Image (cartoon, rainbow, N blue to C red):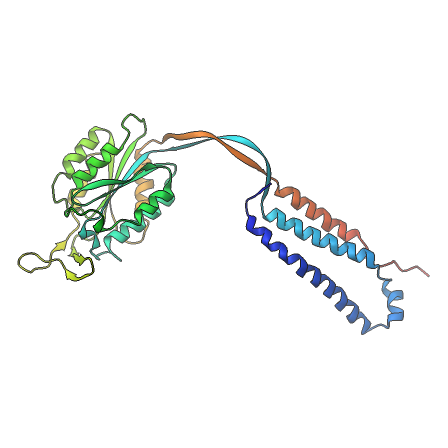
Length: 335
């Protein structure tokens, strides 16, 4: 026997308490009646108490309560095999981890906002394989395509500007890494989800996007940050902000125009993070799902145990019904 909610069996400790309450209630009832009627007349007015049957009534109530707790625990036994399949597309998520992602023009900063958005995104994906590429001046696959969403979330926790020592933002390298991580022999639709502030230092993002489009890979871009920009923190525990050789603050600005071109050249969409943590969800349902076709990524048979909670509920109901027919007092004889 298996249980869906094994924790519910811990509630069985309530049975001794219920027994105590039943005994206490019966005693209080006798005390209350004795205040109005002498003991010698009580049996003649209400009938003599049948202690044996009252014990049976209490046992029936306790048994019914125990059966309801077992039903709550979700007992299962017996099984059958069920054919299941999982349909979706392949999605490589490219996350910019360059120092400019620490700019706080969105709260708490661009990188942390991106992390939260991806976590919400993973919660709504429907059978898709997802992978993770981190990039700045270089790029690498941090998590290959997988259906294990929990593993992908674990890799998200490691995202930081210290992850890649090469400075800069090379969007072209990130797209190229994503392309090579796909199985081009597979018939699944392939999607690149690019999350960045759009400062393409190497200027090869559009070129690689065209190559991705030629391979029928759609790129959906999530621009994070403000076009007005913000100063870049020095990081590594240093105070202050990054400055140029003239001592002026270096501002990192969202390059929406460049990101829109990268998305449009492949038939994808561009979305700008505005407020809240649902922007990627909208991009998923209104963009990725509507512009791609899901195929079977995984199929097979799983063992399904039969639910048996109904048996315990019916038995509990039967005991309560039976308890109602058990009379705990002798009937008075008609004179």
